Length: 383
Image (cartoon, rainbow, N blue to C red; front, side, top):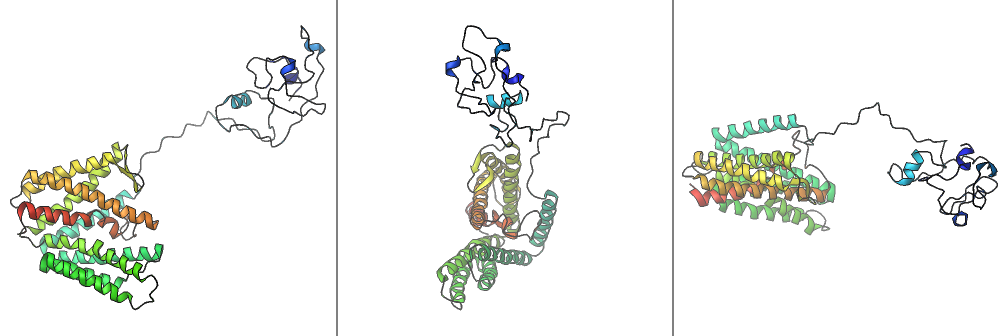
């Protein structure tokens, strides 16, 4: 920095020297050329008091030494000090100059919205699972019951494994798996009565099995075991009970279609138009607009299914059924999101590429099954 910048008279709008008289200045430049600033930046000896100012009579000041490591103000903020620094501030760090923006480089393009998963893999796995389910559903009912039982056992394995890994909760898997599979079969063979009996026996088996280990955390582990028995196999039993009706495959297909359509409508509408969060503390990705999409899609498909698939069904019953499915599926999804947040995980497993684990696909199906079963019984009976 040369002397002329310090010896020039004060300029209007210049950050540092002010238009006050000599009596108001607080900044002094001692003989060693170091700035001792206290606010207004007046230069001692720059101009004698008097009616006129002559730049030739002003004493020449020595160059101000460069002080390495002088902190700059405000970073990249557009304040008055930052503007002055860019236009030639009297204090400058020449040892580490700020880079000038390169106008030749194009501005970064805005990023597109992403689903957060491998969409192609998710579609492929979903189509494959759908083909297996539909084939078993309309060929041999017992095969479909076996598919449900296998899904229940895998879901229990994922849930108990995550509880053990993240929380140290050791819910006994063996009685849960055996009792869960038996629960699904009992529901198909004996209906609701068989399901309740199997549920009670599974809970008792969990209590007894856990007694073979030390008593520490016994209550915590058996509570988690009873919860897992109710959450996964007992709720899945209502799918098997739907299948016992004469139009059982059509009822199960309606249940699956409505749940999938509800999730798809929520995703499509929420991804495109979602602005208002539904439950940001539980699942930040869900929006109120997405819920509206889920309700709309499910009600339309519900009316079509009740009119053309279900014996003695009416379209208006499908509207009620679609609304109930959209609400229960959303609550089920939020419920498992709450569990995963408590465990500190994103997915329950990695078995299904693009989807996560089995439990990540059962989250909305499980609580929806008893809702659909009950409404269909009320609307058209259990036969």
